[in-house]
Length: 339
Ligand code: DAH
Image (cartoon, rainbow, N blue to C red; front, side):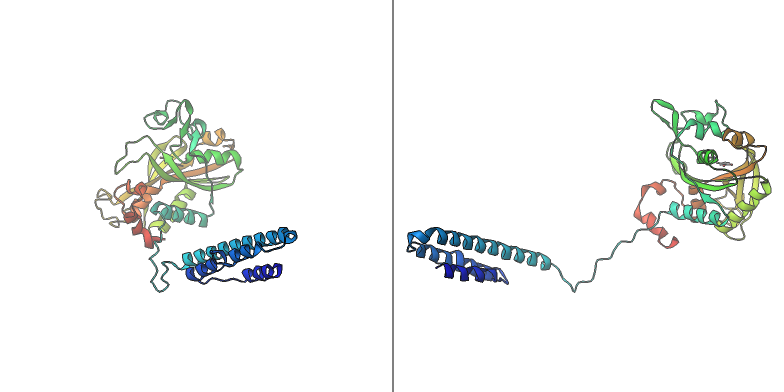
C-alpha cells in the first residue's frame, strides 16, 4: 500500500490543468467520494495494526500534496484568465494626451536663455522672505507705502515676514554671499495684495537682473537691454528709456519697446502711442551696495526687473491675466507649438 501511495504522490506532482474543466476532473479523480483518496481510506481498514501509523501518515501526506497541487493549478488558471480577459490586441491604441508647457514657463525659459547667452547665471531666493531682504536692504524708507498691509501680504503674527513683493530681494541674497563680479538673473513668483481682475492678480512672476563689477555704466545696461529686446521681440524692435524712480536704483528708468503688435504705428494694445512698457531698471544705488556688504567706492552695478506675464502678453496677446492660473486645457493647448 505504501508503494501505491508513493506512486500517487509522484503522479500528483506532474498534474496539469489547461482549463476549469480539466481542473474539476482532477479534483474528482482525487477528492470525490469515489476518488483516489477515499479509496485509500477504504483500504486503510485492512491495514495491519502495526502498519496503521505509518500508512496513516503517508495518506495524510498525499492528501496535503493533492490539495496543494489543486490550489496551485487553480491559481495559475486565474492568472491566465486575468491576462487575457478583455484584451483586444488588434484594437487601435487610445490617443495619449500630450501636455504642453505653460506659456509663462515658455517665456521664462526664453528670457533665461537669452541672458545666459550674455553671460548671466541663475539665482533663486525664498518666496516667504523677511522685511530686510524685500525692503530694508533695497533702500526702502521705513514709511514706504509698499510696507503697508494694503500692498503686501504679511505672515500672521510676524510683521517682519512677508510674501516677497518683487524678486529684487534675491539681489540682496546674492550680494550677501557672492563676491563681484556678479552677473545673475533671478526668476521667480511674487505676491501683492491686489483684488484679482483681468489686469491684476495677487501673484505673478518676475525676472530680476543684476550686474556688479568695477566699471559698469548705464551704457552697458542699455546695450544689454537692447540686445534682450531684439532677441525676444525681433531684430527691428526699438527701445526707449524714460526717467523713473525706484528706491534701489539711481538713476532709474522704465524701458518701453516699440509695440510689436502694430509695429509702432499705434493700436489698441499700445494705447495708440506705438510704445509699451516692459521693465524697470537703473544703476544700483550705492546705499544698496553698502547695505549688502559691497564697497560702493570700488564697485558699481546695474539692475533691472521685468514681469513675465507682461512679456507673455506682448508675445501672445493674452487679454486676461486670470487665464494664466486657471489651467484651462483649451487655453494651454494653444501653446502646443510654442515650445
Ligand atoms: N522691483 C521692481 C518692481 O517690482 C522692478 C525693478 C525695477 C527691478 C527697477 C529692478 C530695477 O531691479 O532696477 O516693480
